[in-house]
Each structure stands twice: as C-alpha cells, then as structure tokens.
Length: 372
Image (cartoon, rainbow, N blue to C red; front, side):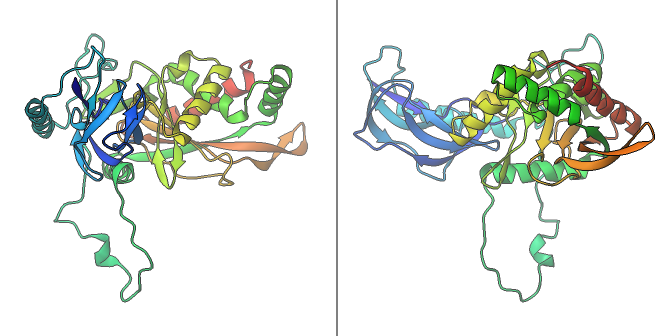
C-alpha cells in the first residue's frame, strides 16, 4: 500500500517547520528509520525518519517550503500492515486545517500539563510567551546603516537563527533585566573532580559539578525556575536545565530534563549526549523547547564576565565565566587562587538582587561542600 511520510510532532512550541532538503528520490528503497528529509524549526534542525521500510514513489514537498506538523513529505510504497493508506485529498485537508488552527491559536495558549502555578491548588494551562517581531512602524537597521559603505556579504537569518533573534528581542523589551555575580573559588572543586576522574575514569569536569549544583539550588529557590505572567509568578514543576550551544553561529538550547534528580556523573553524561546529538544532527525533538532555566558556559572561551539576557519564558539565566587568578587573603597572608564568575541574569519583576545573591551563594556552597 501507499502511505505518506509526514512532518512529525516536534515539540510543544513548534507547529511549523521549514524543509531544508529531501535526502531521498523516487525509486529509492529505504529501511525503517532511514533518513528522508531534514527540517528546521525555530529551535533546531531535525532529521525526519521513515516509520516503515519500502520504496519512495513520489516527493510531495520541496526545499524551502514552510510546512505544518502532519504535512506529507513523500509517498512510500510499503507492505507494513501498520501503515495508514495515503489519501491525497485527506492529507491536503489535514495540512490546511492544521495551518488554520495554528493561525487562530491564542499566542498565550499552551497544552503542557507538566507546569503548575505558584498559587496552591491551581493547575490551569500555562501560556507561552508571545514572540515580538518588527513592525512597519519601526525604523529598520538599514535606516541607520553607515552611509555609502560597501557591503561585502549579505547573510539571511532564517529558521532557528531568526527565531532566537526574535526571542531575545522580546526579552530585551519586556523583561526588567538585572544581574549579580559571585566569584567562585574552584581550587578545591577542581581537586575533587580530578580525584574522581583518576579513581573512576569517569568523564567529569568542573563545569559538570557547577551545573549539577545549580539544579540542586533550584529546589531551594524555586522562583528562579519560573516565569512571570502579568501579576502571577508561575513555577515550573520540573527542573529542566537548558544548555546553550553555538551551532554554526546559531544558538541552540537543548534541555536536560529532571536535572535535579540526577547525580553528577549522570548529569555529565547527559551534557555529553546533548553535544553528540547536536553534532550528529540527531537531537531528539523532546529535548528542545522544554528548558525552564538556562545555563550559558563560557568556561573555555577566555571571557570571565558577561551580561546574560534572560530567555523568554524563564526567570533567570546562569552564565559561567572562564577561570582566572585572583588574590585571596588567608590568615594575614596573600595567595592567588583560580576563580570562576557565576553571573546570574534575572527578571527583577520576579525576584530582587538579595535573593539572587543568596541563590548564587547556595550554588557555591554545594560546589564546596557536596561530595562528588
């Protein structure tokens, strides 16, 4: 029978995807799980795999098309009894109705049930934050461009790059952003990590331990694992740590779900698994769009300080700076020790600076006192 290979349901915030390219041609014989196409959402690029083995009979989309979830990409001839017969008219109507429903959706609507309100007893749907885009009433950047200067290259932002830009623009306009920093001495932590690596051969580093400590501290300071919706503070039920990665100049933030329940070695393996998934372009869709708190790691960059921008839909972002030497007074003597700046960007309409500083001190205490 003939069945359609369609755009899968990717994550709760992506109703549409752009077709980057099809990797099959009519006549190709493919196995179950074979790559059929590459698609791009506002979060990342994914590979669409065939749910059945068979022969590609027809291609139904072309590169550059923006498609809704459920839209057909190709027709597959298969003998698998679990396949749903392809009906061109029904498929077209389904894709059309999906697009209309998406357009009519209230930008604040959300169907995720894993989030709860700060007020006890309320478990209503949690809205997603709207994306703000430039309007005709605003002056474009070109209005202020250097006059008469020749442009060497023009690059078009698309897909995840453009969506990230829009989310950051929303944050800059709508969040009362502030930040505090804490110089964490890491000499003792580094020694503990080195001892564990030597004795167990585990792949573990200092930033793994700091990320773990942040997840644990969010249990004590849940207001940083939250977001603001008007006069309400809404706490997320789960601690999902989003880790910022630079993928060919674009920022992608996959998340480690239930991070507060993991040990340091488990968390370290999750971090490496995210990186492997990104580099292989096979990151599971469930890892995208679910972060409740973001961590940006500049440990290896050489930059010791920055001003992190809070991600839309979150209360705070933690930035880890690069190690540096700083003088420390001890018993009247001066010594130099390695430090890392923990910089917390936060929504000042949710929490104040004193609470933010206490949160950073909690992370530092866990790094110093907790066993690995």
